Length: 435
Image (cartoon, rainbow, N blue to C red; front, side):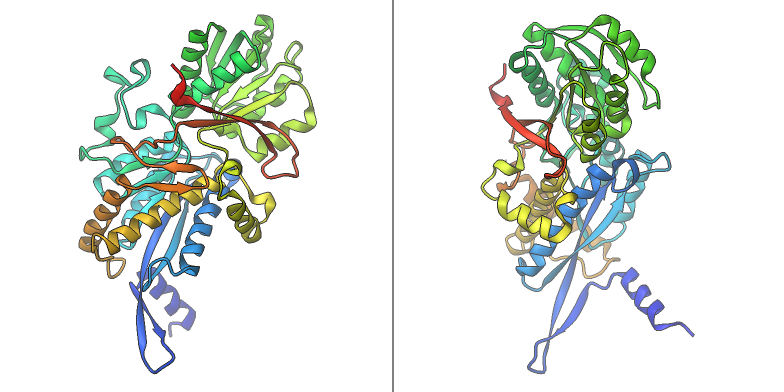
């Protein structure tokens, strides 16, 4: 005999589209389920980046249900983890995750991924579905455009492969590396008066793109690059660091994630003669609680990192968000993309509401309603493309390529490890003013 718990599991897996709620007066009302996928690296080496974003998505969905955002509908999160056997984000795992999410007709859109290398694998799949994919953190320029030409133009263009339908279905609330790289260069050159830099990247799409854009703008400002290296994540950087020490750079800039070299490089700098007090400059992939906790006890040179957007604490809605977030998950759960994951989910929820109420689009009746999914998902994509959204990470609307109108970049240094994610906000740069 099949046990009761197994029957419940089977019914949940089948994804019934409606539930019956007793009205209290002898009648019942139907509640329609709409699912939101999250595709993020939430375990192992990338947990301090991806898990906070997943929590942000969960909070947005909880608030939507608690406030009855869309009467007659219930929102459910379907969370996926793209960490692979190597302990960090894996494009192959990410692609399988979005394929699985697409296979559930009730999934109206997906928040993620975190890493640009994973996005390269996922975007063609979600574009063909089609389904909205909204990232809080992807910054590689070539995901959406063919500029700058040295990085994304000509034979380097990925647009045709990423958009097989010719239409835009991918969006991001993080500003691109043209702006993040420029902001890091401006901060290092103008604010800290560094003049020479050695640049390392982790060979991944995000790290390489950020490094190239930093170098371009650094040289434009008058800075000198005394050397550069592309190094796949390894346990020992001592040989290259010893070589770098001989060049005596004012700063080492790293393009990559904490899990793909950021932590290890900064740790090992402390034990290399000539680099123990050298400043370390990095992008958002290294602005994590894990790096802050690993590095601060070592002392040594200052560490600076950026986030491609406004600092969440600077927005008018930040207190309400952080109060709700810490109540739900605890203060130590805050990460660089807690607010980003939250805002991406809120954007998607607003688009779903628009699709239902304004476009009169019907949500799929169950997880197998493929024809219903196709129509509804396109209505959601259309609503995202035309959205005007004000959130914790600022105002977002999307251009014809799916890129946010928000071009601010925020700078941080390691601060109190017992406060937030261990980073102290310094300032923000409006990169739309940079020439």
